[in-house]
Image 1 (cartoon, rainbow, N blue to C red):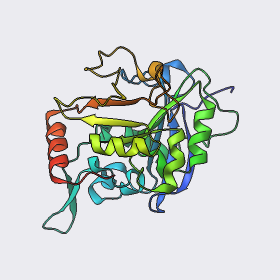
Image 2 (cartoon, helix red, strand yellow; image 1 turned 180 degrees about the vertical axis):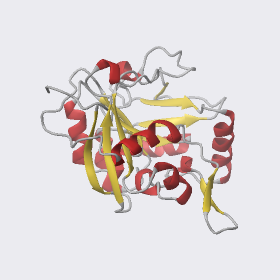
Image 3 (cartoon, rainbow, N blue to C red; image 1 turned 30 degrees about the horizontal axis):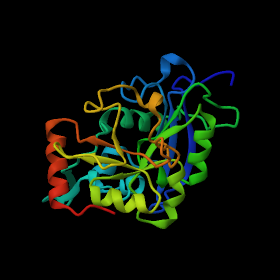
Image 4 (cartoon, rainbow, N blue to C red; image 1 turned 45 degrees about the vertical axis):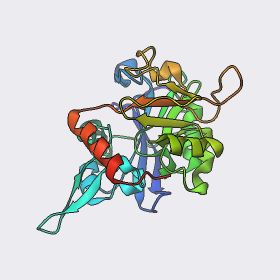
Length: 270
């Protein structure tokens, strides 16, 4: 590829969400020029794939429930509470993504027309691909996600909460199932998924689980772009058994409080 636009981002898909049919856009950012790549210290300089609503800004999507188009029934979205004036607000949100920063900025750039359409010549052969820096990869067509992975180097990382619906099972080839209990993890292992489980402090690993090596408890031994363990069904141990990963819930005190309340008050989606 001969040149990059100033934001180093491209539109990979515009169309209906596979979750509810409402309009979404898939944008890949941070490709090409090293100075424009992601500075995320956990993931490393991966190409970042954002799945967002195309007609609603991400803050309003969260407060109105419009983020269901890109996140489905993820329990970390929080819950909507109706206010006296008839509008809604979001409470108990425990998602780790700081939407008011990068996601809102990307939405603004998209609405300004800063991102061109992704063309066949655009590739990022020296970078791995992170599917779902925001949003669930299952919201977009499988072919779109597969194409984005093929443009990068080696493998990708990614997670989905849509593992209960059989129509999303092909995503097992590309991403992990995001889960929040041992029971949920075991059930999905039996169905052929590898899982990435969020644990509470003091919880223990299943026999086929490993602590995320980019986490505190994993010793921060490597970044995601070096590990690439969260990339579908292909990772196995020396005995040929599929390996899954787990991480202790982390984030600000308010988000951890919301996380604990969510999984004590709400049923786990399985």
